[in-house]
Length: 293
Image (cartoon, rainbow, N blue to C red):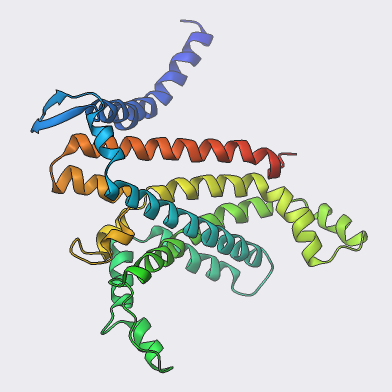
């Protein structure tokens, strides 16, 4: 075997575990879910082909469309607020300030914390009777707020937790992008009389736009897949469940609580279509604001 073939064999051997992992854990489940969405679950491992019946049922199901609205609302709020705060924190921590490393660590801690632990801590903070947040509010004469049981407040409460967990990760990505901007650009802007605001909008923002675009796309996809915080913080019998239930949670309920895995697969395929549409829109719009040069 010549040197060229050895290199190819070595290269394929190195990528084989990743390729197999993607095929087994991603590609196969995708096609399996697509197939199950056209069937009716008759028992464990027994399915009957029924065509588009699950999708007809899905279109007429108000619970599905309420879940779509909840998912989109969570995604819009968490992405807009989360990306904005991430950018602000990244810009501030890119400056030479005392304790910069400590602050970066503190902001990144939620990323490495287990979602279940995060949800439990926030659930205690939100407790209407003994929670720290309501205790602090009572010091200012504000009555108890039912953060997780009031349908008007539950979604906001979930968004706050989602934003709190995403800021650290996005901050690291944006910070890496900020540090790649040549200092000469800022020096040239200062020579032209640009102030801090002008330098941010005419130098920082255009130069960091590719990283910002990546952060937005991944944050949107993550927002559309929200599940763990709803699962851990909102009880199924909670009156606020209808106003917070996401498509992924609805998939979980239909597939694992109600045992209708075929209908659950149809819900997942709907989420996939929504994700692909939104991602394609973002790919089209990037040409207007993302600068790669």
